[in-house]
Image (cartoon, rainbow, N blue to C red; front, side, top):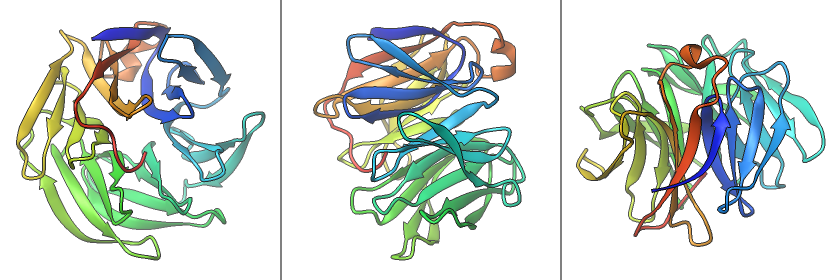
Length: 270
């Protein structure tokens, strides 16, 4: 395991895009980028607690503002409001994933009765899934036909079929009875899901049905989120913190990004 970044408060929402790992610093009101060599830059997000990130087909970045329940738009120069989701989201926003058509799927993290909201390119929004137990990390399969979401309090991964209009149907269990709460997730080319098992202090690779094929121990740290990237998408980026609860980390800068090389490359979105 190789550490490439530290000195931030609470990292979330890692995304590999154009040679950089992008991730939110939820308590630091910022989005950071880091190269594989460890060179960091910062995009300030003043007045917001950023969480989920996603890149649109035109290369612009959408940022979930957790507590304000808004999507923000960053074009490389200016940060502006994109969509206000407060009327649909009755709990803070969490992760998001953007499909090939530019539709954003955003989780609202109610402990029960959580929802996934779809935000279209015209900025219209609607609830497309409900009844989730704290929806967290999300991925979309390479064919664009399936969305998988981590239900943290449900300790499961749940899958939906995506129709041509972007609606979610045919809810099913991908993996249930997990031994810890899953947070951020990443999909590989063999259909395995790398999941941050937050309170378990590890990252597990889980296949459909629930078998754990690989596990990375974070040695007492909370596993927060992960992403597959690098030149061949064989670099697994691991975001961890000293504590799983952000409110306990206010004012600290002890979160970090580590990397490991995996055999199966990343696939799908993000």
